[in-house]
View 1 (cartoon, rainbow, N blue to C red):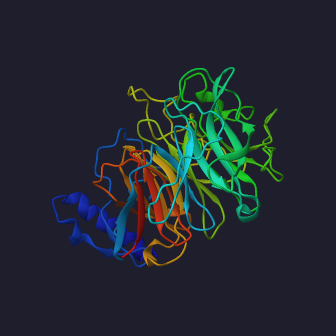
View 2 (view 1 turned 45 degrees about the horizontal axis):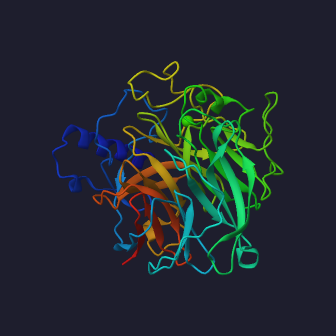
View 3 (view 1 turned 30 degrees about the vertical axis):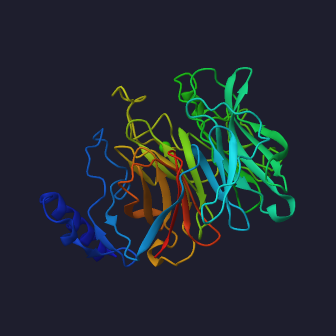
Length: 412
Ligand SMILES: [Ca+2]
């Protein structure tokens, strides 16, 4: 292992010393039997903040060798935001404006599904993440996150309902959870992903609403914004949630100190929750989310304000706060994500795939021992903002873009 680590450093140093070299000339053997290349990010960073450990940003590049195809199944969606699979393999997709669509694996799009409580789709709000009940085949229940109009402004809320057998409407839709406090200022940073954990409870990501008045609440255990939450299917705090020592801690909290988490996924082998989070200017993050941990925002960050001003004390590390597993500067705007399970494309097994909005690509991260050891950019050059990605029951990856496209990505 020591030899390999040295080899990585030498390869990187060689590239830095002579950037005009053809990058294909710098192939070496590591990790996971994948050839490595120079880091995919070559743009100038916004800061000179040093990473906390080697491999926390700009790791070596990797390139998928197994031939694969990406096909546009449809371009007929309107601002799709969340995508998941129904047990029969069709895809259930939310549209930001407040409807859902079912799309077949060949791209046939069903009519808009109605019956969903009104959403506020201004700014980053709307109908957001979605998941289906593990017992969907018998109960037809689905769960989603949305931006709700409330007396004090808007807030991130969770609802559930039953997909009618005709697939035209959601029956008995009910709001089961509201992430307090609401905010009247702005329409940003709602978070908005949702998934079932192994215990049958819901994990939900909630943003801190961006405004300088609400941003500090990411650190407050009495506020549900800027958090990862864990709730039951009825919206109650889930049994077994961690205990936070501070007074008045909300029992639905799972982790704190998040900015705008728009991606969550369960690691295939460890079962742990991983998360993507939009940073400010610089400082997009991937975190391995553990219960009761504090992920630092806005006290520590690898980014700066869009004005160029430092955030807080301009520090990146503090005792009692977790470091991101990985970060990007400049930003790529990471949104929905999924781990690749299966091995039809062998080098993708257990890799993390993340939709990048401003980056306009799909990230593949190779992860080993909870560290990122390789990064690849897929589906580049398409001018598409990738909002969410999921693995279908057929093993292919399916990704939606803000421009209304649904891509299918599979072995050639
Ligand atoms: Ca953080």
